[in-house]
Length: 296
Ligand code: UD2
Image (cartoon, protein in one colour):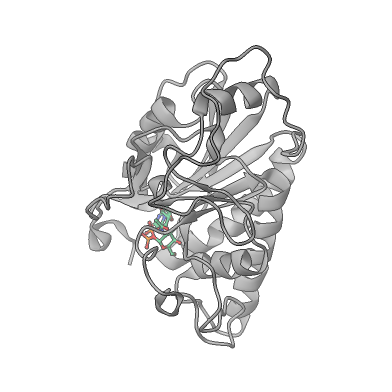
């Protein structure tokens, strides 16, 4: 299992001299707790790839396609082949109640697709929220000491640009495209103090997406286990956080600061016009008709 703290300089590779006085000035690329925020033009992809290639890392992606959401899987998988950690060892785990409908997508060498059956559900909130439990179990049963990094992604999305080694870190969160210019008082955190996802007004750093997060296997295990427990303890008291596991994720990231943050390039939404600081859209949510695809 790799560690972020022992990167070896790549032998013999030539690349542009790094500058500490020139670079992007239209966005902030480091947080107050000194985590990098990844934006286009803040990293050298060849340099990063050569560093991680030597470490022979393996990367897992999880995606849930329950009920009608199976319709999004083909585009998700095909575009992942084009843009997600191309050239690296990648295992994609698809959780679905319709294993027979999983599309046959040709995967490059070193990349595999694994299908895991899950029960159907009548409430979309439950499908979305149970992901933490299933991610926790997947890590415990199949991934600990076997893979290095994991990303957990929404299926109703597509890749449009590179998503690679620049995104790797201990605990990785993605800034939600809908709120990143807003004051934190307007973030849709869970605001009831009785919920374990509560974030008080005046608290919170960024509003992060439930649709993409990741990091080292052990760190994501801790996150999934904590969010699952808090979600279930809330449920026992009849509480469901405003945005289900996204609310719990946001609470977790407030108390356990992410070590790397991905800009909204890493989860845009197709219905939103692109803002000028977004020089590339790497991954985005497709426009969907909720009434037609959700079970209720
Ligand atoms: C947001 C979040 C989502 C989740 C949700 C709150 C983003 C972009 N999306 O999206 O991650 O936090 O709010 O619960 O941050 N699913 C199925 N079948 C279903 C319903 C859901 O497979 O019938 C899975 C599927 O992988 C989907 C994910 O759950 O991508 C999230 O559900 P959603 O996309 O309907 O949630 P949404 O758009 O409100």
